[in-house]
Length: 248
Image 1 (cartoon, rainbow, N blue to C red):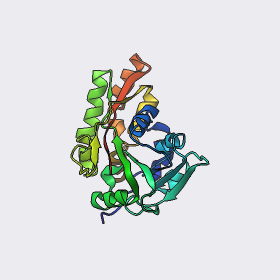
Image 2: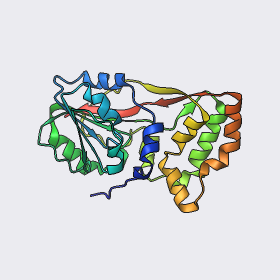
Image 3: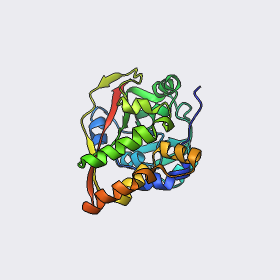
Image 4: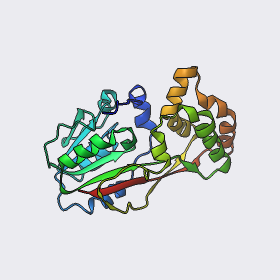
């Protein structure tokens, strides 16, 4: 089985504060295909963002992650059970789950073993939804240029190989399910300098860069970044929702 990677435990608080949040309407659209909503599995839940949404739509939610530090700061709800478990080795019973959601994490998994596990735990007609978001864009062309420069030129060699699946909008991952068309959604924010840089510092490649060089790569673009936000206190930023979903 593929070796697990935990790139986010050390920055779990920053991850919770600055990572974009999925629209509830996205989950509503995915759930339209479900006849019952007894149990959902938020696989690789991170800080429990998706699990919290699911808790209002399902009787019970199981939320798993390999990062104990992430789970410690996840919201506590009566019908959410958090567990430290690999995606490929869940403690769920056979044919017990109505919906599995994997948000911004499928690229880290061992596809063969995870899909076997998903098919084991899903009920007949149950749904697997894989969602995420690629590189953000903003309304400011110079800011877009700086972000792209950071992403490709500065951090290009520091991204894990799995990042390519996000760049491909998850269209290059295997997906052995009866697939539906994912509805179009996006996440938008009016971000300040602190909010944008806080998000950029959650990138796993930034962490890898710092471990190797000892400096924050955002320092390389700080001066032009600050000038943009000096001229405009907030900048509209947008994340396109990407993903695949289908049923057993």
